[in-house]
Image (tube, rainbow, N blue to C red; front, side):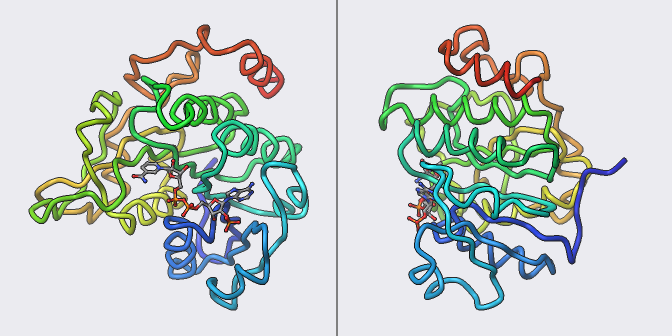
Amino acid sequence: MTSTISAGATVLAIGATGSIGRLVVDDLIRHGFAVRALVRDPSRARATLPDSVDLVRGDLATGEGLADAVAAVDGIVFTHGGDPRTVDYEGVARLIDALGESRPRIALMTSMSVSVGSDVYGGVLHWKRRSERLVRAAGLPHTIVRPGWFDNETADQTGLVLEQGDATPLNDRRGVARVDIARTLVASLTSDAATDVTLELFAAPGAKPSDWAAAFAALDKDDAEALAGAHDAGVALADEPDEVLADIDRLRG
Ligand SMILES: NC(=O)c1ccc[n+]([C@@H]2O[C@H](COP(=O)([O-])OP(=O)(O)OC[C@H]3O[C@@H](n4cnc5c(N)ncnc54)[C@H](OP(=O)(O)O)[C@@H]3O)[C@@H](O)[C@H]2O)c1
């Protein structure tokens, strides 16, 4: 059974007004998806998003509007960014709870270095790693993209590499173009080979993937037991805080 989706399917964009989300929306439309966006302020969002996008008012921090946002969606792309705990982590938990029995295809953007974690930036790397674990625990068909530093690529880095193991130190500041992050997230929705895969994404000398299915097929699947990306050597599941382990137990059912 395939868990991928194709043109005509309805995809919910979370973080659609953001610097990556806005590019995701354009790419979803280019692929022929019907696009719905969860937005906190519809009148502000209307000014930046194409008219064809269906806007649903809601808030990841409170849960408002989430049930309406996920009704009958075939896919969800997460590119949100807010308070690390209440939005980046708990927002994902609320959204998964709102899904009930439905199992849309998920593309979740987090960040390089999440598996290792760090207390920088309010602990955002820890909370994003934990949000990845929620998606894996819920058993939703997913691809997790961990980009490097937005638009921090150098002139010779005209290509794109998909890596695993999350071994690059954050302070190396390896970059990747925002537009390539959006393209990778959207391409993952349509590729069986991308299902249940976690990857780091960086610009590099060379070429961009011309065959996304082949690029995803070269990667290993997530470690379902450890709820980690393949080859992650960072924070173990057992070392997550008790409240996170409780969320994971609940979602594993
Ligand atoms: N900068 C980097 O190099 C880098 C690298 C890797 C990962 N990241 C991560 O990427 C994420 C996104 O970055 P960005 O620059 O694209 O962010 P951004 O432009 O600030 O966009 C954030 C998006 O999240 C939405 N959002 C925030 N709080 C929300 C809530 N309570 N409910 C619903 N939606 C909410 C915002 O909606 P509104 O329009 O309502 O505000 C906006 O659409 C961040 O978490 C960041 O940590 C950044």
